[in-house]
Image 1: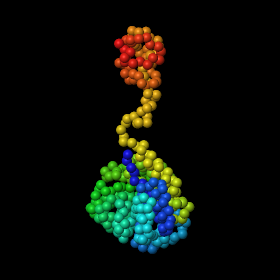
Image 2: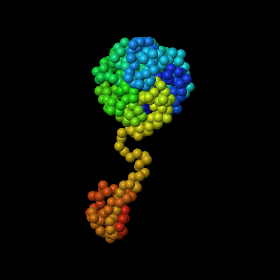
Image 3: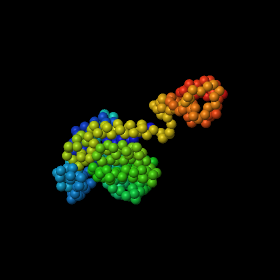
Image 4: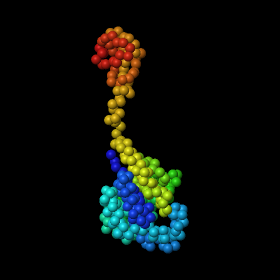
Amino acid sequence: MRKTLIIAEAGVNHNGNTKIAKKLIDVAAAAGADFVKFQTFKADKLVTGSAGMAAYQSRNTGGKDQTQLTMLRRLELSFEDHVLLREHCEKKKIGFLSTAFDEESIEWLCRLDVPFFKIPSGEITNLPYLRKAGSLKKKVILSTGMAEMQEVEAALEILLRSGTRKKDIILMHCNTEYPTPMEDVNLLAMCTMAAHFRMPAGYSDHTPGIEIPIAAVALGAVVIEKHFTLSREMQGPDHKASLQPSELKQMVIAIRNIEKALGDGQKRPSPSESRNRTAARRSIHISRSLSRGSRLRAEDLVMKRPGDGISPMRMNEVTGKKIKKDMPPDYKLRFSDLA
C-alpha cells in the first residue's frame, strides 16, 4: 500500500505565540499527520517597509496591519522558539518541519536537521535562495503556486545544478489564494507536472474542506499539505482558509482509507468478495423434468443461483450430451451426470 506523506501546515497560525504553536502540534499529532510544519523567516529580510499585504491577508486580518512588514513581525518565531517546538514534536512523536523564507532561515533549519526542505511558492523565482537550498543536497519539496511550467523547469534546473539529486525532489501543485476557489484548483496540473518532469508530485491545498486533498491522493499525490488552525475565528492571515482540529483528523482518516482502497491495480477477486461468488453467480440447472438418456438441448437448461455448479460460460460443452439419470426441474447439473 502506498503511503501518502501528510503535512499538517501550522504555518503562522500560532500568531507568534509558542503556547498556541504547541497546541497546534498536539492537534496535528492527535489527527495522525506525519509532520507538522511552521514557517521560518526574518520579517526585515523578507519584505520592505512599504510592501502592501495581499488582498486575502488584509481581508483575513481585518485590516489590523497596514503593511506586510508589521504583520510578519508579529508572526516571527525565534531560533530558540524553533528548538522548543521541535522538542515538543519529539515528545508528541510527530515530525517537525518548517519552511524557510530567507537564507538565514535556511541555515537555522540546517542546524535543526530537518529531514527535508520545503521551498514555498513565492521563492520559485528567487535565484540566490534556490542555489542555497539546492547546495544542501537534501530532500526537497518544491511548491509551484503561481508558476508557469517554464518557471518550474527553471527552478528545477537551478536545484539540480546546485547539487540536489532529481530523485530527492517532489513537486507540489498549489494555488496561492486563501481560500482557493474550486474552479481555480486545476488539480490535473499535478498529474501534468508528474508526467512532464517524470517526478513524483504532491498537492498543497488551500480550498475550504477536505475533498480536494482526498481527490489528489486518488490521482496519485505522494504528499498532501493542508493548513490547520485551532479555530477559524482567530485573527490572522491564514486562519480562514484552514481546517479546524476535527476536520484535520477527518482528512487524515479519509486519506488513509483512500490509500487502502487504491490497492495494487491488479483485477482479481478481493478476499472479502470471494466468498460471495457462489451466492451471486449462476450455474447450469435443468429447466424441466428429463428422463435418463435424454440428449440436452438449450431449452432444457436454465441458469440459476447458486454458482457452485457448471458455469454458464461452459454451456456449449453441455448441450448435445446425454444424461445418466432422471432429473427434476432446477436440478443442478454436474459433468459427472453426463455420458
